[in-house]
Length: 400
Image (cartoon, rainbow, N blue to C red; front, top):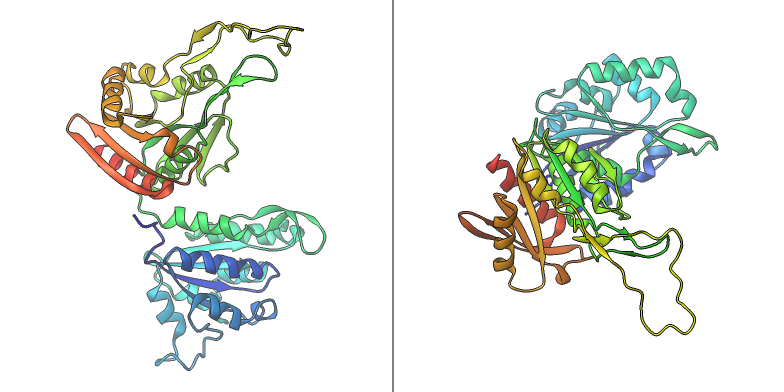
């Protein structure tokens, strides 16, 4: 269950900018993910980071000039662009973006971008410059022209800049570029589909300090949201109280209680192609939320009694809609995994349920899943949660 970058060949073109140091880390991430990386560097880029560093990280000799004699035909701008699955210009300076927008061919990177086959080698540009340079009308015209010509512009971010100023123009971090490139290159079997995912625990307050919750980390649900976005779906993620970053390309709605999750999900569910209920939703909540912290009475020997009320059943409610989306439930069990999960699938009235042993997966980065439908069972052996999520999304895409 490899990631979408495995086996891809990336032509990584570096123009001048202090942000070039981030590209060393990006190269490491790409190679670790199974991609091959061919680095080319402008003369200005070599003032910030050495070709020796980039060669060591990529495992390939760095191309520095359009007159590279190592190419049998002296045409690196043709040869390298024909081999690549994507050309990534990062950092892309203001000068380089101008050259790309104008179609100039007077140096290696712009020449290669001009010579590539547009349909076979998409161009991605990652801007990095001072905030005033980014905001200048000339740069904004160039950005608009690049997009009109089919390039994808990633970023920029806002924040502290090397010059000491603060604002837009800061290059994305290496992990952000990696995530965006992965999102861009992944196969898109769910393009045009809308998916709704719930993730994490819920928290049912007893008073302003205490509450009832569970050990769910939300990692599985967030991985599913990421995998669905990679597959081209428009993904909405309704998340309980977790401290996880939002996956790229995903719309996120944060909630706390089961009722809040219900209120967020139901208005959206009828517009979705699929609903994946990964969240570990509390079945019960305190019937009364106390305004102030419950105090232990002096000399008390018994705990206070807390009356409970049943929470709404989100998955069952979605499955009962007049035109429900394809519903996928999750069952976190502690024993009799297949038996209890199948009973839950029938009780909820859904076509597919994904079962796992809760105590063995809460908070972990790996998991093992059992997919159960009317036809039987399919086991997904233990792997990292993102790999499992991608496999689950592949399965779902065939069902849709």
